[in-house]
Image (cartoon, rainbow, N blue to C red):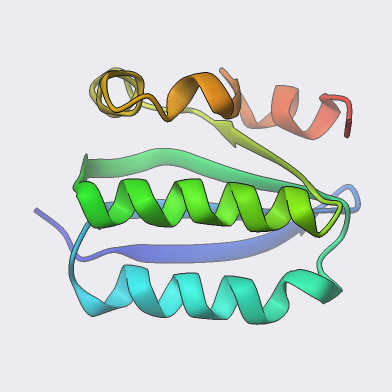
Length: 116
């Protein structure tokens, strides 16, 4: 399994976080969470989490995704997950998190999704 990494890119007036590796209990996901919350006021309205490269997801990672979504919504941002691998989608569904999140199959669909 690979270390958690995030590449941040700006695309069409949105910010996309392309994640890879294991989203779990290591310090990297927690560092990302803290950075995300600190940057949130300056972020554009549309925020995309591309999970295509995520290999595994543990409870801490589920909490990070859910908290980022809640905080983004409270800040007036529109957060969308995209490219969620089947095994990650299953984990998010079983834990009850997936139904509250917006998700698309592709990054292009996430960038085109309504911001409401």
